[in-house]
Amino acid sequence: DIVMTQGALPNPVPSGESASITCRSSKSLVYKDGKTYLNWFLQRPGQSPQLLTYWTSTRASGVSERFSGSGSGTYFTLKISRVRAEDAGVYYCQQVREYPLTFGSGTKLEIK
Amino acid sequence: EVQLVETGGGLVQPGKSLKLTCATSGFTFSNAWMHWVRQSPEKQLEWVAQIKAKSNNYATYYAESVKGRFTISRDDSKSSVYLQMNSLKEEDTAIYYCTWPGTTVDYWGQGVMVTVSS
Image (cartoon, helix red, strand yellow):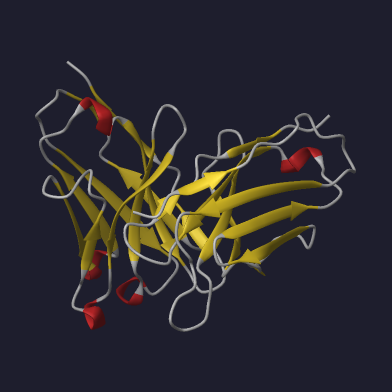
């Protein structure tokens, strides 16, 4: 199975600052079609997870431009610009390159 | 509006069975590849199973932790997907979500709690 390892954040992050979350996979997430199958989700308190980005850097419909995904191969980053109170929650990366699909353990973001 | 509503959760003893239902609306269910994902009390997300569409021969895939015990199925006439859970273990205790990864956005149900305990 592909293991997904996420980094921690130096919480709390002051409102208006930027925050970057890292995610590393134990195997390349590049598929034979050339796409890199890495998703980012945000789970706000009491809610279901919400897709933020897919194919590493494509924002899901309705997601703020303040969220940007980057990376390649086995190392990925989600950057949140000008953090706001509504960005608080737990962020998860997920690989959908191969079965079984696997998630990282989550990174908590607190806002000050 | 897309909706996914899970039902069928509850408290069950180890070794027993439970069947979850996810009723959907607002999209062309018959073409959709559907998933079940669970979240443990420790908040870890775990993908459980996927079922593809009729055009993909309803192919199914499972996490190793549930293979042989859980069965995912669907009824396109009812726009519903199911998760039959047999031989339940305490470690199956979780919130179970039904999900549909749409084209540019994904959809999740509100989740249903399953507690396995004697």
